[in-house]
Amino acid sequence: MDLSKNDNLAPFYESFADREAFVKSINKLFSEATDCILNTALHDGTFFRPLLKTEEKTLSDICHCQSSDWSKILLWIPKERKPEQCASSWLRKNVSFNTFEGVVVINVGDSLEERALEKENQCALPPGIHFNMLLSNCILDRQSKVYHNRVVKDTYIGVNATVVNNGQIYHSSNASQYGTLKISVGPESGGGREVTPILESTIVDICQQLKMSLRRRKTVSRNPSLSCYNLIGKDCIVRDTPTVEDILLLPNSRIEASCSIRSVVLMPTAAIGNAVTAVNTLLQWNTSIEHSNVINVLLMEHAHVGPKSIVQDSILGPDVHVSAGEVHASVIGPNTNAHHQSLVISVLWPLGRGNVGYGANVGSNHTGRLPDQETIAAEGTFWGLSTVIKFPVNMSAPYSIVAAGTTLAPQHISMPFSLLVDQGQECNIIPGWVLYSSPYTISRSETKFATRRNAKRHAWYSGWKIMRPYTIDLIIASRRALERESGLSEYRNIPGIGKATLSEKARKAGIAAYT
Image 1: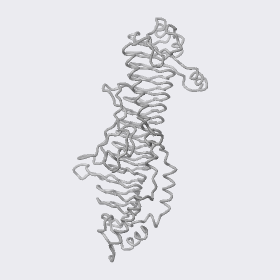
Image 2: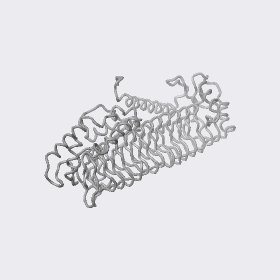
Image 3: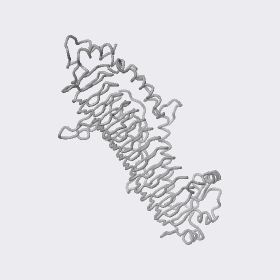
């Protein structure tokens, strides 16, 4: 596809194309290896060949390796090496104490540049294939470091990749379509909204699938290729993880000291760290997961989960941070933070930019029959300490604050920049409170969003101003609604205040704030 230099989606198309090329090239390598296409030059001038008798003897007698069928152990010969040249000296240095099964391809090439890099990194683990209980149907590219693994099966290990101290690395029997998910957000039962993001999706894509966006934009909406192998790309790390199944790691991504990883795709520089269980999860650039359980989730650029979090069936937008809490069946938009122990269930919050305080329960979605309710949250919503949100709530009031300890009954609130606060048995609303009592909040937020917006590939849609035509129109409509009523000590039926109580003093203050 032709891409103009100003195309905001160019990085996403390029990522998709690079991923497709990588998957297809490795699929082709496995096909050529298993079909025994030997002594025939590959596309880069290298070629596969079987072991020479001397090499077989070196592996079995000197390197202490085993195989039930040495004819299936192939060497990947660099183009500068002659086909008949013996690689026994290379094998003695780089291979020892392994059991091979099925087709195993070992790349015996190393460039001058790679040798120089190895000399510079004297303290780093040297390239080699040592002390693996079983290597089955694998391709081990040059300079790879494969040490002390129990089982590595149906796996490509890329240039300079590190695979160390793992339990089982294997691929399930069914072919995997790397980089796609099927997630039901909103109501957990009885009519959930299904979205099908791919690895390169944006919040704009998700909104279009949910029919929350009136404008149609181009999206990267293709189905990626299938593969029957684990793919660990260049300079990747997979270490100290007991169970690894169905993975695709693009260059410079890593999985370290996790618990269980299954059906996971990592873009470059993404990381899964200590004590993580991740299933059906996609991680874009510079994302991370630490000490958490993540199931059926897309993390967009610079989104971070952990420590001690549970995230399931959700979309986390760019620059979202979730730690110590739970997020289920939700769409969380850019620059949203849930840094404390809190609960977010069935919340559609695509514009994000909000905060979830300690003890906030934005998740009362169960009617006593089924968890069949949802909440819509506006841009910049602040759920205060120990708030309780009883679904369904349509909180379409941008940059409003639900004060600490407040309980919201099911309702629709649309007055922007408001404060909602519990007063005994009822909830009071103060329209425009943020504008006249805390204008610093708006100024600080503008600066904060600009300086903390690290997801540069998503900046084309996540860098909007707070005061823009959309919010100004809401302010004007809210002021008109407040001006249409007068003469009472309190109001309960003004459009936009939901089921909250509005005092005459707060009405006048709101009109002044919105003027």
